[in-house]
Image 1 (cartoon, helix red, strand yellow):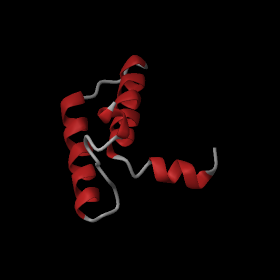
Image 2 (spheres, rainbow, N blue to C red; image 1 turned 60 degrees about the horizontal axis):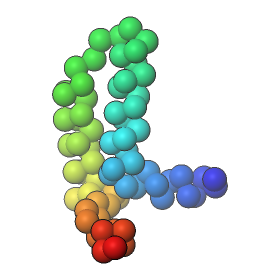
Image 3 (tube, rainbow, N blue to C red; image 1 turned 30 degrees about the horizontal axis):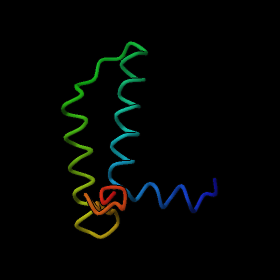
Image 4 (tube, helix red, strand yellow; image 1 turned 120 degrees about the vertical axis):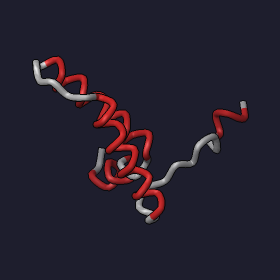
Length: 68
């Protein structure tokens, strides 16, 4: 996968949330204590700011797979 394709995927909020969720699980599995709710609240807030600034997108239910 090319770097440009990876950067395009990182502009999707669902991808960012999935990556952060996986990282939280890995960190907690390693024995560190994190408040998952606070981490996700911060990430959701950052994604919302990214959407408002036009950096990220959230197309919701506009996927062509929903029409099948």
